[in-house]
Amino acid sequence: MQYVFVYGTLRAGESNDIHRAAERNGVADPVLVGSGRIHGRLYDFGAYPGVVLDADASSVHGDVYRIEDTLVPVLDEIEEVVPGISGLFRSEHMHVTVGLDGPAETIECLVYPVSDAAVQGLPRIDHGDWVSYRRAR
Image (cartoon, rainbow, N blue to C red):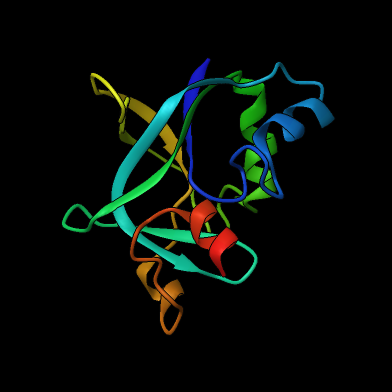
């Protein structure tokens, strides 16, 4: 078991909903731990967002799930993360603040950020929430 922070199309109800991805692949349903946030800059790639990690930036909002290890390759495939090949997204583990509506805790999570170079010229989502941004545009 491990944790993953999802901030874009992997969020529940979005085009790559993490629950549907698990179900399609016969993996146990992810368990929502709570709302989370990381420091970074969120950008609009059109059909999906990308986050550039930045400790000095504002918060990017998402959800933290406890997942089976067997779901990680499914998520990697969705995000087109292939070991040894440089792509748009990469996977890394980082500390995520969870529990925005109550006592907060920090959990190490798998996160899929993009590089700073990948977002040149793209619109920034200043408030850091892909779902509310997508619904408003």
